[in-house]
Amino acid sequence: MNISISTDQSPFASSWLKLSVVSLIAAGLFSLLLVLSRTPGIQDVIPWLDFFHTALVVHVNLSVLIWFMSFSCLFWSLYSREKFQIIDRLALYLCIAGTSILIASPFLGAGKPLLNNYIPVLQHPLFFWAIGLFALGVLLQTIRVLLILPSAKLGLSSYAPYIAAIFTFASLISLYISWLQVPDNIESLIYYEYLFWGSGHILQFSHTCLLLFSWLILTNYLGAFSSFKSETIKWLFISMLLPLIYAVYIYASYDVFSPEHRVEFTDLMKYGGLFALPLGLIVVWDLFNSKSEKNKTTAAARAALVCSIILFLAGGIIGFLIHGVNVVIPAHYHGSIVGVTLAFMGVAYYLLPKLGYNNPDWKMARIQPYVYGAGQLMHILGLAWSGGYGVQRKTAGSAQGLENLPEIIGMGLMGFGGLISIIGGILFLVVMIRSMWTSNSPH
Image (tube, rainbow, N blue to C red):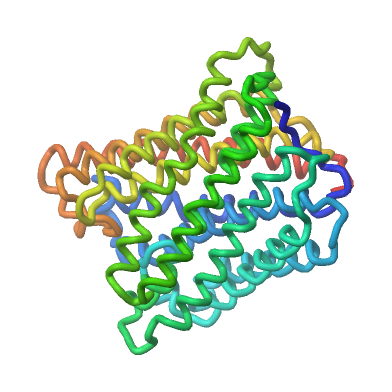
């Protein structure tokens, strides 16, 4: 089995990569303030609480929604190649416009943050224009992909992006259905919680699909070709669509504004994610049973792959330990999110020379995933530990109620790990900027 990415005839792929990097640069500026606002000793120096909530909304949307979907659009741009390029161009311009407005919105008066799940909201027209334009761009890109059926010529490299596009398209359709059904005369936080609940859960399967695709790309790049048949891998990817069938059942059986809707989608995420387990085990088996040659160009890919597996696994395990509303919840989704992020970082390094940019600084690229991954592991372990003592999520400063030593130690570990991960994130951006913006490439 051999999985690789062709960058031929994909003129906008490098622009999608640049957009994803820019979103991380902007998100990183907010993440520093977020970590400081919850770190014992520092949190009491400045009254952070009001800014914390606004920064959290912007940071989450940039570091998860914009980063993940921009990189997904990169995969889809490479998948579609020369077909329907006008759609690729229009989708790119819409997403750039939406991202720009989102970054600028807090400085142009957008406020009144709501910390609902999946897409936290600033109650201001600029924010909704930003998200709307970006979503429209993603919708166009998924439609473009769905018009181009997977081909035997591309083999496995075509199935994962196509299936991910199905999930994303279904997520946007479910968002529209929820918008039609959720009553608009309820309290705003509850309104947006129900509005994004179903679509947010469905979208996670798209991210998981591209995570596994990234793992396979990196594993093959390392020379660890799988002993499993391509047909087996293909049907394992296709089987990941089964949770989508159950999602349709949920929408057909329960009102969107009902407790059953929330519970069913929570269980779908918990147990539906197990469909990714066979592919994950195959990657781990191939990685640790390979005899691939180690060199400076593959060391960064190996580091990103190993750290991605560890963080995604940690996030998944913590997800089964959630009880109540506390910081165990962000420990779970931070692990999962960072697992996807590390996989995308590894693919970004892999793509740089393929897209005509300079080779990355391999020494820094090799170290970066370990720094970022170790910091994030400390971050989520600190959150999980503190959650066991009842520290609530989405709070900052004195509102956290840190009174006992175990709680302080846990959140201190969270803060220290967060600061280390910020260093790792900065290293990634330095590597990418050096390669992309000092290159002689015409891109």
